[in-house]
Image (tube, rainbow, N blue to C red; front, side, top):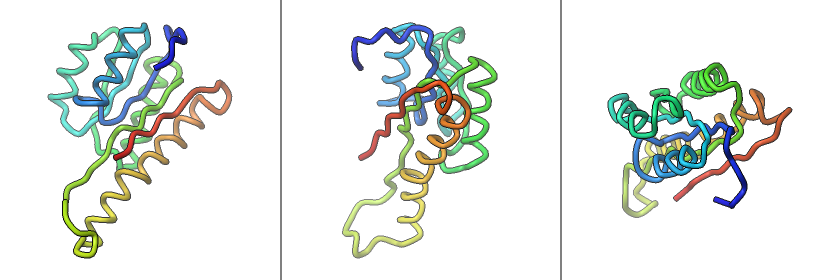
Length: 143
């Protein structure tokens, strides 16, 4: 993060119930921003929002590759906070390890859908909802 004052901005952070995504959300809230976090586990998301502060954070549960989840997350962020200045695409999956020559193509499709296509889907939705007319930033975290 830069030393730019972020207070009053809003971020949508995917895969943020724990780990790197939660750390990003925590840093943004500490600087005065508000966040919408997403993830697959509602209990973990609820706990994360409690730690972040319900006045500064909200959550939307769902799978990153689900287009309806993407739409709902952006819509709810706009409804609740009125803007989406930042998108942090942190959701990802890597369910297998081993030689790529042996990788099941259906697993490869799932990884690509979650790690690449879902990031593009969230980016398109935040662009059209806010950033096209107001600016903002998109950060893609990948492994």
